[in-house]
Image (tube, rainbow, N blue to C red; front, side, top):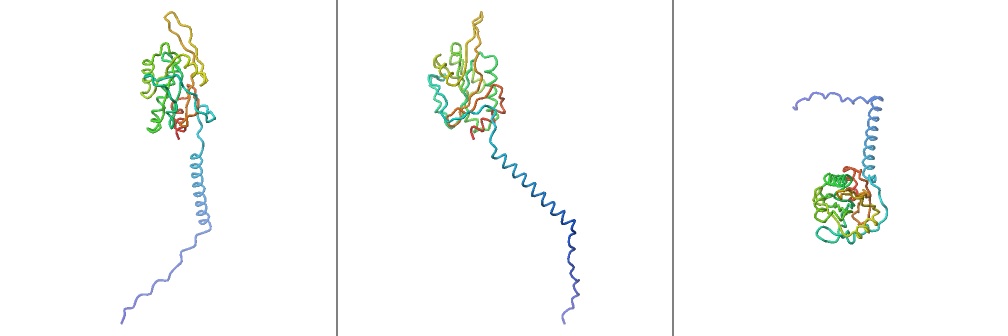
Length: 222
């Protein structure tokens, strides 16, 4: 005879949630959905928001003005087309400059230090001397190399410098020598950026600062 099993207890249904609890659950779900939507919208806005440059953005796709007639310390002519796919910073200055030149080169060097390795490798700086009488090629190359070993000094005859300065909208004028023959050179202190496409894209003032410059260079290279 099979054993007699005890009767199972009667099944009871769980109590239905109260209207207040239902409203609480719905409210939490709505708040979570709204919060998720805000996070997604913030990510999308920041992902597609155009970069706001610290410098003045130039329009147009024409190639940057040539530096024809100018050369590096070893005598190799400057060919801006050789830098396609990279950024070229062009600066007109001189080695005896007491303020703007060292500040600009120092900020540019620091900006490159702040960039990732790929961006840094694709960023170049050329300083065109506006004082060829005193800035012989060796002095010029040593001067820019002090700030960053990758910086290049560019020089040439006065007529070639004048032509390059004119096409880049750069003003410069030698001051009166003192009793020791020393003199200052008034010159435009702008730093100019040529984009990877070879077009002149951005002009920065000497007060741009390394952080803002690094961000702009990254945007140019992106």
